[in-house]
Image (cartoon, rainbow over the protein chains, first blue to last red):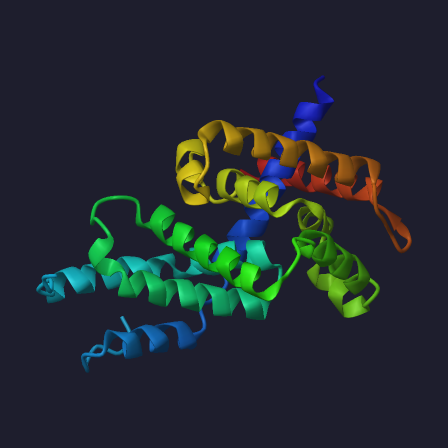
Length: 48
Length: 196
């Protein structure tokens, strides 16, 4: 058995899991507010 | 210089795509900074920069790679401003290790994160982009502004270094030798792959 390879795979799985967990965190409202302000033009669409 | 006429529908399409990328920008920023607050500041700056530069983006090309490149540039230009030496990686690694003495930090930091924090920044980002962000070597090279071969060698060095850290435990943690970290990762990845 190629143990080193197995370990590399395991690290890869864990790495993706760690990143995916970060990606799935809810985005703070602040982000959308900043973008809305940067947009300049007052628009009616609040959240969609 | 001519002022480009702004097309509202194109702006709206751009914005929709940009909003969808925010979680990815935050994750990438966290991987670079290792700090949640600094990461959100960085991700917000990158988001605004991307929005301001939307005219230079070609719709239909890879917006994720484009925004990651903006975020990365922002990260390194801020880092150059705030650090006179390039000792950041070492210091960040030390801070991370020190933080482990704090029981609250112990919950948040797993062994992989510690291992990542010990890598040189260019290896860490290459590994994150290719190994977790879903980018091809060519895209990662574009984001990092280096040759494809350079990315490949950084990723491979990062993998070897991580494995050494996690397997041989080049660092120790209170009561838990780092060799155990590798075992727990192996167990967990087996569980994950059988759960599919």
